[in-house]
Image (tube, rainbow, N blue to C red; front, side, top):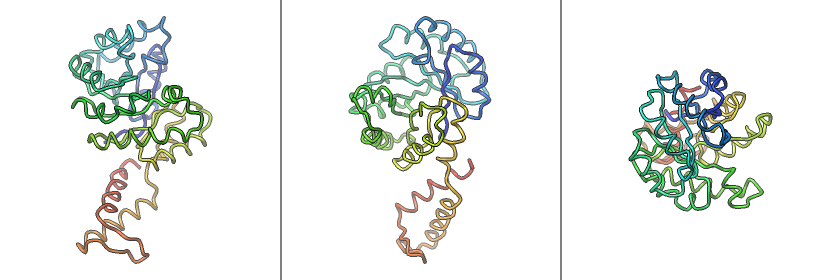
Length: 268
């Protein structure tokens, strides 16, 4: 089942990590990159490796440092063989060769973060780079800076590009990037609604209070579930393309969308 909530926590704060593991997220992402000061990289790596020696109660991923930094090789070496690790998130990927490089070195599922114009241009090549790659997503803060984008709408084209690339490569729909203001829950909900309309599924979070907002935004409403069930019942008659009594037209594409909606129902 595709996760809806990905909770990021700093790798150098083990007490915060412990709280995150029981906060209700679908996946906890321990961050060794942006959230950790260079002087604490070694400590963060050591405590994360120690925690992940044993299996965890839910999937735990680690965002390692970018592959062109002096810390990346040590991150990968320290995490190899850790039974509690479910996946590696690779920041600042710009091409498929980087994915293949990591896939050849470690046996974990990989997730690529696209954070630059070059990465967006190579989105499909990255998404299709290796069977170990299980997902792609945008890092919008870095991408915004790279492009000089000021209005949020300026990122809608790269967002759609990444969503299409994931689908074309047979990967799950990408999750949205983080909403940086942990107090702005109304803004988070509005942003999630926009992301859902674009085709995202789920979202990264940086505080537990964001989790229920994201879940509500991405779970189908009762009306949406009822509509989807009506479509599937009509399709089961074998009459092919047809109009419902209220005038709504259904065909194979509409049926496929209804099935996708109902696939989320057990979560609610």
